Image (cartoon, rainbow, N blue to C red; front, side):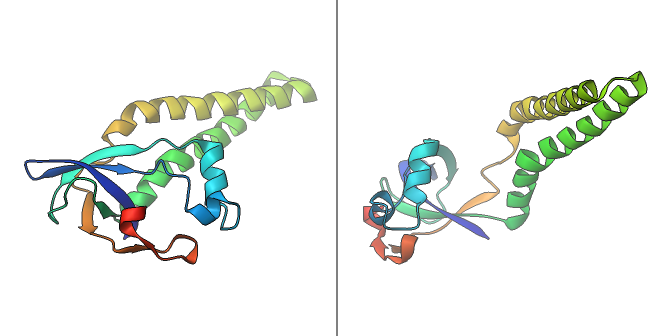
Length: 163
């Protein structure tokens, strides 16, 4: 089970809206004395993600909660995000190279056509994947697991209410 901490934003009729991410790291990371997650968070400017789930644990507004996702769902999403575009790019490169060689192109043109078809194939898959990605995860596949009492980011115990 893949676990992620989140914060409850709203509670309505047995459902909760939770916010995931958006924070840079713990204070040690932000000061440059921890694992470095704060630096990457600042560079990448991650935006928080909000989702609505069943309130199976009786969570309240503002509470830190723990979400769980199966490894199978995680691997499926990783394959869709990275694997498909990579595979499309590789197949596009092979196809572009084959096309350029059969056209009798010179060495520079072979490289250029190989690159162009690889990038086109990868971008095509990314565009179609992005249109379908909104339906990748349903609230039935991610669950509220528990209310965390501590956070062990960077090896420091931080109370959940200070996350």
